[in-house]
Image (cartoon, rainbow, N blue to C red; front, side, top):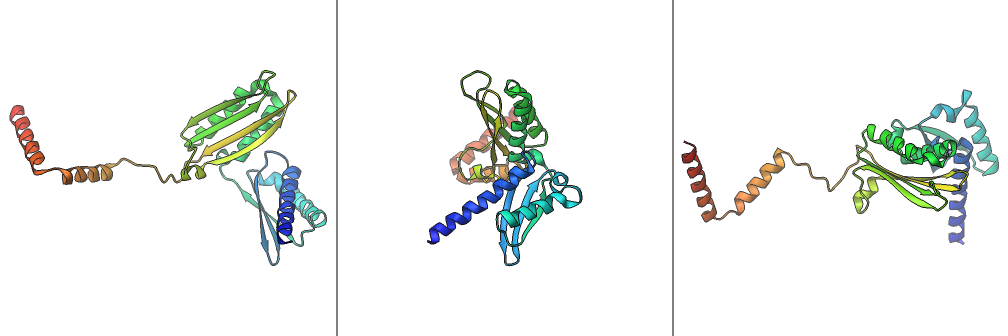
Length: 231
């Protein structure tokens, strides 16, 4: 019985997220977090357009709160808005933007749309980005196109810092899948090596400590020969 209650709880939570995303519209919301407290539920909506989510005088928030109470039986839902300062580094917003552009301009301009989004991400300062489009582009047979620039981790623990998201575009030839991966400039890469003077000095000391007396003597003689030659 406990397993069934957990599954039902997760299904209800997923339904709330899907309803909020659908009601606010594609391209406006990045992610939705639901937190539970004794006084009620906190629904945190991450968006780059808080004005469009709140509405005039907060009417959209009030309507959404009312629906969550009546339709999903939430006791005391409190909706909070979390503004995204740099939408260029948010993979979900970029994926939705590409999907909306494909639906508006058609799949024949998929290369222009993809390269424009890629340039926008890299101009903002991202370390790397990748866009994958899958579908009937532009032929009658489905195909996957990849657009990438910069540095992007694919495996290991460092790949966890890469923001990934996906979206779907409903076009006349069929459904087009959009996958986006972005490595932001503030990502911490544990395997990144910065070659500076401190590191070079450590390498020199390490090499010198491993040298035998014979090698050191040969090195000194070589330096003396070079100095005598230069004089």
